[in-house]
Length: 484
Image 1: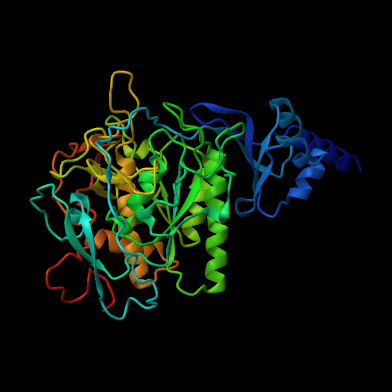
Image 2 (image 1 turned 180 degrees about the vertical axis):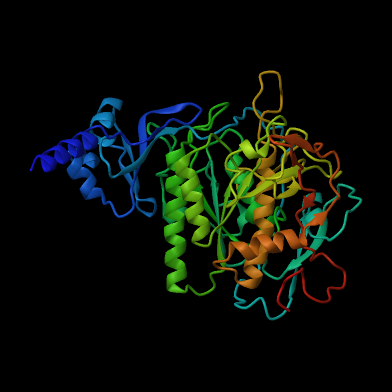
């Protein structure tokens, strides 16, 4: 009997002294906002019973993340310590953080131009793998010329007509997590839409003002990125994928970037839910899902878990390397995750971007300077990225992201592989196609190899993105690995 009493007292003391792990990411914290992850097979109702109250009633910003058995909550720290951290069913608590390691203040855009939209292509073909039909995209800039051949070119800077797959990327859902997109822009040819038909985003931090789905950023960042992903209707990209606007950054004016780790994770998981539902329903014409996130930020356990879940569900995730030449990509989040495809950039002379992070976590290099992009001022407006888009520095006149515009070009190419082969649930094969078709050893001015840690040699891979469809007389398969 005495042993039972002592065991009960010991167990009670252990439970009462329990404190769930509490992680505070580096960076600017979102005030009084937390992400709580519960242990496997431990339900929200059980958690509320332990807390003695329904937390969804206490917090106006409460939002569940079912695929991660998690939730976001806005509460004062004392309540979190008293009610949530004492529950043994809690795996960890993470303080929400503004997710943006880079800010931007100046466009470095050249003069705007107006172009007529390329006529919409026939998207009715259902099986692209049986034969290689070609399509031509007019007014393609140097970047698209560079990525549609299998060798180094002597580029002259003039727009040209290039040959692509027939209906490249058709049937692929390309999710653009960014500052919003002008979905009516003619670059998209009617293929752009707001995620879940939202009129206001659900993924910006508490207190955000400009939550409508349009691109309200000072520099049309989201619209520009989306046009490189799926702007084939005006020769801005080589893909006719569905550009799906998932606004995660609100009030992005001047130097401000208002985006949170919880919002990004929520967006990833809602996209994953939709992707899984489409796969289960065997939706006709669906060729897969790909996510482009053209931002980097402080490490977040929740975003890491969300990216891993998305990848395991069959979604390819593309991110840029940070614009910091002193940063090893092993410390660059989320570039350093094996589940992402990490992109660095080059110019039309095939020179590596000298403000990029470096290291062997970079998977591929793509064009990222002096590129034509759509902007949100009207439905036909096009600008040129007249310089590198760099991280914010008070002494610099160019203060936008550099690699963030190479990332969507890679997304565009990958959507070609997915659409042509119907890779609806196969990120592994998508990555293999990217690596097998890349052009090796043509990039110059790469950072030198570096020895770190216990004599580990770190080398930035010399691989340029390519899908070699631009041939005068196409013969054989359109690219390495393509069914023919």
